[in-house]
Image (cartoon, rainbow, N blue to C red):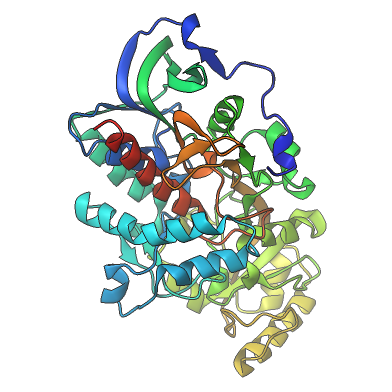
Length: 477
């Protein structure tokens, strides 16, 4: 167990009640706590036996969680969509990228298995459930060695959530309720028997299997302070409101092992003036970041999660994202979030770097020199002053830019699970009838912010969601 995980995440309030202390109000076969990507996929997977009754409880007014706030891009290796685009790679290639990014601090066996199952996940979503996905082959996120992102329309997580919700609502043996928080687990001698949920009033729901899909704890400032590095505590929180660590605490009280609780995904380019996300595709297509002195402060292509801390360490906790019209036009119409950011007035433009930087509060003369140095290295194909090569492209007038800050998106640590998403105790035994996925489960990003590879969140969200739903369904057959 991680040293950090030895701390109790509970505030003293009982997260689990005994079956002897409640009377059942209603019952179901599979109870899914949470209606984000993990929960919706788990519900669909569990529902594939029409005799299995599935209930999804989402505490927010609408489904989606962090999946709806993401680009919705699901990484997978060896899919037919890749092959149709002329891309040949194996799950081992994807696993290598993930493990190299986190310095092999993640559970290698789990990483390998999720990467192998990523192929089945994409084919299942597209072929069995008619979910719209396409290959992104015009840019790569930091440290991805191949084009493996499978994206929904508009490269917007809201669109994949909308399709998943429509499939769930049209499946006869699934009941989906919103404004319905799961408040406690109900257990009998350590085995989960159901939940207590707020359905207008508290109701005890008996369930054969319970899948925790409540995401992580990034929205719980106390837990972030307890587990994550100090610098991210003061960052803007940019995740879903419901990410308060409920499922993590539920499982921990039943003895579930916690791991990598200091892991999280940050983001380096949230626009300060409009609060809009400025997609990192801007950077990976050639954009750079400078501080108020007009200077670079690191290799932007290292990864947007750890670079969030680099931004927060700059004067005022802010930086300037600089790019050009080529990038602006290339991304417009490709990313709905980028289009919305444009509509909200996020970006400024000018014919010179100096004028643009001055307008955004940076040293214009030094910024112009910085861009000139960057352009010279990019043209030559050499590492620049911060060592960057990946995604480097010369910038030409007219120039675009916005002021950005670092943000916290979601946590990556949580309950240790097996290959079926079943929650494990520290001695390796299974918490009977309990599953977890997404941010509720320990992720594949190792420790801290630097281990996060773009797409890791949805790999564990949709990956564990499907695996948990399958196992819950088959264990009832």
